Image (cartoon, rainbow, N blue to C red; front, side, top):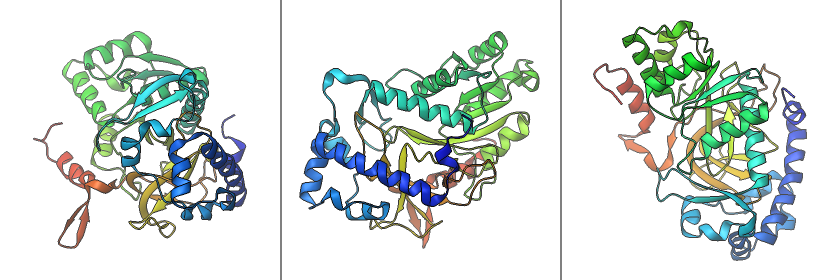
Length: 357
């Protein structure tokens, strides 16, 4: 199944599919979530009247502070159904706990399977995992489960230690790396210092997490250019995800944004007043998870400022795409009428040879 049928349907068919899934999800929350039961009552929300995606605007969004203050109230299942506990990184406040059922782990595996397929990966792939799979981290677990769903092999090396990474590359001959892009430069540096020909390593692609590789127009940023110049054989695929959404958006070979999987998540882009922005404008990515049992979220504002792209892709998918993260809303800097986000400063620093890490 290279591309799920729903991702090849027309925009109107995808919308109808999501509206049916949304009704089921609202009923589930109303039965099982203490937080959303209170939320609906407090804001006089009659879920039977939420029939179309546009009707979501009548429901006030959920925010990170809600998860931090009322974490337990979001759990929708009995404790004996929880299989795994995961926490967010805590980069924008106290870490938040997420409880996952067996079904949720299957969904996570399916999500990452779809991401790998977007990046052109097959069951013949040998992945080398260069991110942590412990410390309550979702991404490493998701990659492992997705690789297993793909029936591909994985070498779980974890993060850091360039020497061990190269020892593993020599030993297992992986075809694809899963890594933070800036760490790829460390891998290249180590190879060049130690007489290792990384061009002949057999690695052909990298699934990249964390650092951005592209500008908003999809051209490579400074980090992306450095990797491409020093390892031209390596095809890098950007991914965007967060623990809260338990879903990822992965580039295909055309590199024009991470593909949306409509069977897993509803996506909105909102302004500062929680209204949808005009199509194609930057807004705060706001998500509604579909098919999650443990801790589903309704209109959760991620804090990430992105743009949606809606033209059909040459890969055959008709779903919208999420562009590179412009910045985090709570890190926005306004200076003399100009809006800046830290990633723009990082891109400048990447051009200065004396700056490391």
